[in-house]
Image (cartoon, rainbow, N blue to C red; front, side, top):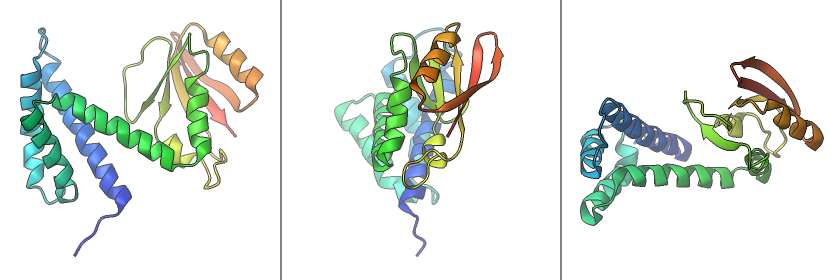
Amino acid sequence: MNTISKSDRTDLLVNTLQNALLHLYLRIQSSKAVTPKTTRNSILKRWLEPKLKSRTHKPIKTEIKLLLLNMKKNKADLETELNYVLDAMFNTNLNENNKNVKDVVDYFNNICPELFKLKIYKTGVDIFEDTMYLPHYFLADSFSADGKLIEPFTIHIKTDKIDKLEKHLTESGQFNFSIESSDNNEHTIKIAP
């Protein structure tokens, strides 16, 4: 019998749920009107149901079935449910990692909170003003088992207040940093150990 590791199973579930949401957003993006919840649910349901019979998705069949049943039974908003599950999985994964990783996320989340927001992303994303974008992969790849930052990572930000961010990073002294590129107020900042 072929078994799948917990991390591979989690990755499969995350990828499936994210792909379902991407499918939904691509389908409704051309509409000028607001797409009703029932239509959104229907699009997601049609995309997820074939996964119940897929060999690739067999390890997460129960989770998909529960999401679909909850939508049907409780007339739930499936889009909101998928986002909730993804957020919960991210927070659980973050809490299972060492405390230092969470401290780094909290640190960047609290840099001048009145000026900047933090978003953690997996793939390409639209860049909004005064929002820092932190790649999700840094959480695992940039830290040693004992929680020390061992690999540099980058933060992307669009702002005309880059001087305030530089000042805060310099004063904190917690990380070495350099601005790798700047173009039309879009900046890439390299954070290093």
